[in-house]
Length: 513
Image 1 (spheres, rainbow, N blue to C red):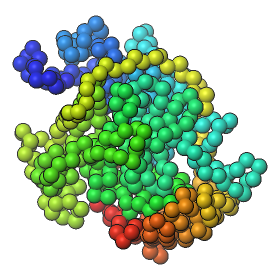
Image 2: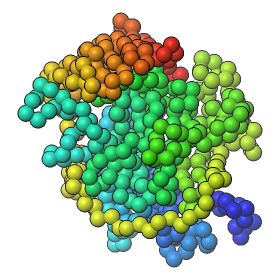
Image 3: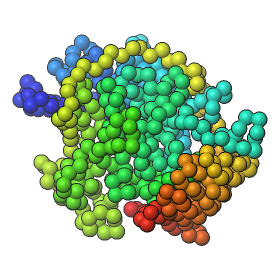
Image 4: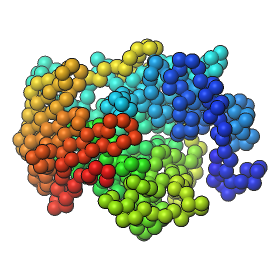
């Protein structure tokens, strides 16, 4: 805990450790058979509104009647694990609902520790005093049920050979949190091919609003206390993701099978290509880099030094006048020879040579205000998929194998060929042929593109004309991303994926870059 008003704690320091020495306590509290509970000890800390508890990873840190900011110390606290809803379930990046009684998180589907899919989950959070742990109730996957629309692009009812492009609905590929009123969830999705943007989805209607807009990867995020603004970490600095997402007017069709490759592009080892941005939710196209400055020189140590990476998660002060985020300095092997950074790794000028630092951005033209009251959430999410305790992961719907026609909203068409895997459980390959395809009348797409999953392979030969001109292309052997055999290793990249837009060229990174 760090003081932000210039005052100090009773011990004379401006900071105080709340969790030092809790590891043994957390392990002692873990219940037999509760695999996954308590495994993460201090990830993404979030205080409950009662001021005496905080969520830390997959645990709740409880100081009883003592307030965290006043008299709570590690020896006076109890760490209770959160029991998973089914054996072997993995809960990652947990987010506390504003009513303190519900929880959201992402549940990955893993092979050898590598993500192959991920589901957003919302549940109740109840304390079981007898078992000394928290438990999940009314577990609900934010995945449309059988009676709802199943995706952005799906077959037309009664016309199985045709596809339709829906308005954004249930766009929560990865759970990023709740709005401050607790009525909506934040998540990641693609509405334009390989533009990984944020969407706010109403938990009652499933309607989604796009709140970021850029050919990059947008991830950690938080809405302001009045839900009018949003701060998020984004990889647009240096055009890191433009090699795949810069071409406008291309629908997210091949994204269905190659989205999983994105995890190998916005990271390079421990380096994340993130910086913080702020935007109004009702005007996502207008953004401001929160830490912009006049000295973005790599290695300078300035607040906008690109070798100091933004990390998860940014957060607002309760009165809406400040934003806190943290950065990590690029360290070997993510810098040095062969890397798209300075030729040598930077030397930290921070006290003690620290490689991490906490930042506070003061919004000087904002007036402080009280956060609005929060109504208890009732877990009535009519469009989502409820599961009972012990049930396996739900099955994600997918386009059946076949040949389809997708008409452009303004002109042309796309012929889409879908191939399923041998088990018929997922799409393994997509081929698309664009013929004067236009969504908006400004951008016209022609050419062919295909993609396969695991390893992720692109073959692209697209051209763009109209308001903008450009192309997205690969060589004869395509662009191939082979996932690592286990978590923590790097993917292997071969070939190139190149996007040209209005005369500017963006090229894919190589292995380790």
